[in-house]
Amino acid sequence: MAVKVTNDKEAFEYLKKLARERKIDLDGAKVRRSSSRFCLGVEHGDYNGTELFGVGTDRFIWMAYKPNGTKKMRLFSGNFANDGVVEFEIGKVPAPKSQEVYETWARFPYGVDYILGRAGYKLTQGIDAVLYGNIPGGGMSRSASLSLNLILSVLDANGIDEPDRMKIVDLAQLVENEYIGSPCGKLDQIMILFAREGMGTHYKPANRSIDYVPLGKGASDFRIMVMDTGTVRPGLEKSTYKIRRAECEEMVAKAKAAGFNISCLADIREQGLFDKISAKFGGSDPHLVSRMAYIYKAQQRFYQMMDAWKRGDIETVGSIFRQDGIGLRDEYAISGPELETMCDIVRTIPGVFGERMLGGGDKGAAGCLVSAGQADAAKKAIEVGYPRSRPDFADKYAVHTCKVVEGIKLFDRF
Image (tube, rainbow, N blue to C red; front, side):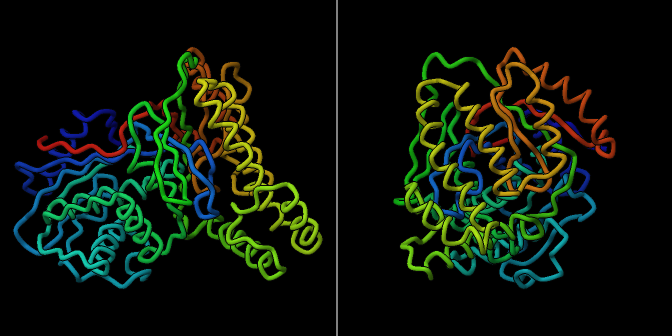
């Protein structure tokens, strides 16, 4: 039976309970809490070179940890209790992308050890750790949150201070790309690691810079709602995400070979260039042109959305969020039937400003921006409509109403 953990106090008590049951000594341990994220734009833009904007949200992974005086890593996850205590010696982990780790959450601590070692970090101190999270399993970046938490905690236990936070982002991406085999970009890691309470995070890939953007004064009171469909997404490496990324890379390669001066789809910003590439490949590769069309239009909408956020015009932010969702469904073809059912339901509720799928696609969660006064009505509509439309998931879906929070928080005691 799932454990309901909604705040730090409940999480700490549950971690203590798990530690007692597994006979793991965490007396004097620290707790690191890593958030989830909500991307406002451009979803799937990170690996295509676009600017990004999003917030940290209050669904978390909590990890209690302390150095154990040995070279052994010993970790237990309350979310994957059947895997037992994951135990290994520093520097001695299975090979990257091996079948041995394909189906276990242990691929994340294994991957962190492998990537940190390869990057030249001298790890001499193992940790004992117990962790638990309430982040839904698709759409809110649970894997990025976990990778960041593990990296920061292992470095801290070894007395290593890495001041370059963008380097931490790179390391977390490498854990997924090179060890696990998941072709993720950097959106998730950036939006979690840099998230600040009450602020939007704006990332510019041209100079790898971060700006914090407050919501304009006078914005109507609103909520971020995440609608977990109850479906299980097995991982980006096994999903349509991998196919879409390859298609985008193929479109860029073909355009370059035809003489167009671009290095990624984000370079296609002017209507004339977009029209020329569309005319060149529309007949032979219409699916690739469709993927390009989503990124092109989403970039145009991105700056409109940013301006609306700065004005406090959350209604326009929501409208653009909705347009992005239609593009993800029709042009990028990355959504899934259960995700669209959630969107169809909340779209009928007055006060829902915009809705779309979240994250990698296929399965997982959708999200919406809704006025505070209509959040309960949106939730009730889902409770009535979703089980009727998707009876196979009637006892598996969930609705999360979220706040904008700090991405990473460290507690010295718990």
